[in-house]
Length: 260
Image (cartoon, rainbow, N blue to C red; front, side, top):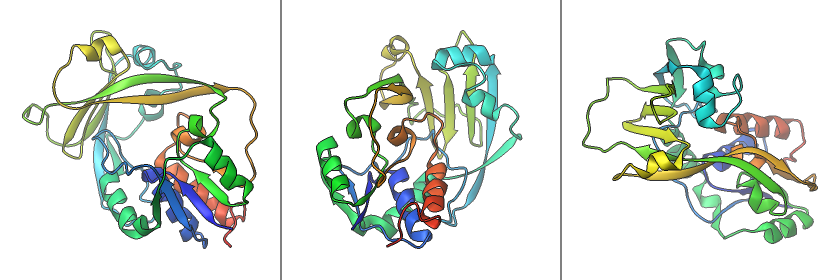
């Protein structure tokens, strides 16, 4: 039986690498599109064996954690503010652009393009194939009720050069500032909002909507040969791309995901 990865974003390609690093083989990666590039708000905190160049960024806190959590629709003490507030002045990270380029060069020949729905995924599962899904969970189990926070990412105009030197991520708990996060990474500056009214007053440049999972309600059965991974694939807010790699690697080494 085949081993199939659903999704060819960073999570999907890292899952593929994890299986093969652990001694298995992915037969194909199914996706409806390549995500390709990432906005300048994303970092990797582990290079997952890709021999990436290490970089340093600053983590900055502005204002109060409770205001930050309110802006994000998160509980106090459970947000990124809490996770990074004791971070060293310089935080070591890796470039997801570089990672994705390497992964695509290595595993791009496994990609097959198809628009999947839950009927297709159920059929593949019933055929006995091992499936690692990094695509959004509502596609796999559409009958379940999902709760999420929605917002927008706004890219600062390329002609604006008011940023300080060096890369940084700012978590903003200032009640007089509409954005909740600002990131100056990989040559791009992005603002993150969770309020539609605030973003509606901004014009120009790139605006990308996003969905962040909160919870799901309803009964469903996950077949033993279907593995849900990634933030949207497992509907877990804190799941990171590097977590996907190490979780899949560990499951393959333990034989939970078969190597044959």
